[in-house]
Amino acid sequence: MGHNDLVSSWVRVVRGGTQEIESMLDGSGAVVRLTDPGKTTDPIDEGAIPEGFTGVLVSTSGSTGTPKTVMLSRTALIAAAQAAIERLGGPGSWANPLPGWYVAGLMTRVRALLAGQACVSVSPHLEDLQPARGRSYISLVPAQLHHGLSDARIRRNLASYSAVLVGGAGLDRTLRAEAEQCGLSIVTTYGMSETCGGVVYDGIPLDGVSIRLLETQGLSPGVRCREIHTSGPEKREYGDTRSYVTTVPPSSGLEEGTNRAGRSLEGRIILDTPTIFDGYLGDPGLTAAVKNGSSFLTHDRGRLTDGRLHILGRVDDVVQSGGVNVDLSEIQLLLDKEFPHQVACFAQPDPVWGSTVVVASTGPSLDEIWTRLGPHLDSAAKPRGILRIAALPRTSSGKIDREQVLRMWRNSGECA
Image (cartoon, rainbow, N blue to C red; front, side, top):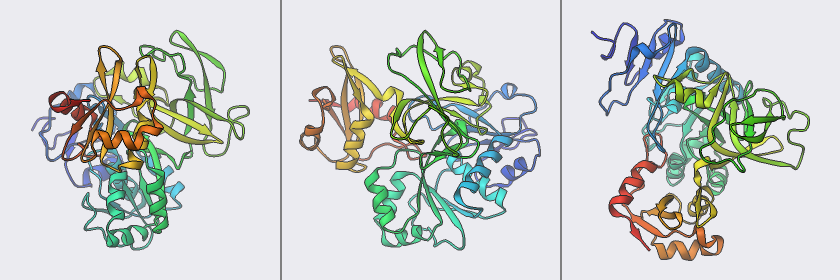
């Protein structure tokens, strides 16, 4: 049986249970590859796996680009799970309605295994969710939380959990307030596959994790960070542009001068974390572009206010239309408030304006969107086209699948 078959002598392909993951965490020396049971498993180059690596190979969702295979070591997985358990107040069982072949679903199993607790699989629509017994946790994406709150039985069951972790996408303030009014203990998480999932809970980094911001004002899209520094707020060279880096240490407080009370700082988020990935399988160049030691240069923009991180959106969410910067994340926040889970915005290249904003909608017309959002949008941010679809395409991790939306737009989009 070859190394790329269902079970090999070294790389073990997992489509369901936890036995292989448990063995890996116990130090068996195995490499576990997580795969979607609904898709054909493509062969991988096992020669690209570093010698002595023990851990998990997990694919990114590919919601904004080509999926990548991320190498997560046993050490990083354990560090992530232990930090989460400590922040949540202690070990407990887990209910998991998330795909086990992505990092969020994987981490529910890792936390449960390390704590010697159960991890129960739950339908993505939560219809089979049972009330918590003892100290229990559950991880959701915002769309699942929105659905769960609409059903009285599911809502009551969610309220019985010690914490309801919500990640994978930004959580609307109104939705969070509604959930908390229903008795749910909401904890928002921020992280990515490359950090073994969430490492910032409710805006505060887990123990051992720190946040830094790279000022992006004046950076051209082609400029890359050539080096990521691990020390305090000193002037550094990043590509061909001078920028400042600001550090927020692990949950204890702030370094002198980094973010005094009442002051907000904005920039591209860098996470320093012991949970960092070993690299992208077979792509050392891409790995080097975002990883330096324990530092990971994310594609997200954030704001730090009094030590708490607020996610503003992706770096590439800011586009130029007619020479004006347009923040797609801000438009999406307005859409989510007016038309929850019905409309998604994105940018379409335009030969005259550079980019124009368009929307994918499951119901509201372009006129309705203009009427509701008009008072809050500048002319450059006004949607100029619409894609009418039955449902917003999502990845199996719950994110809007922008790549698919763009393909659908090219076939069926309507310009205003």
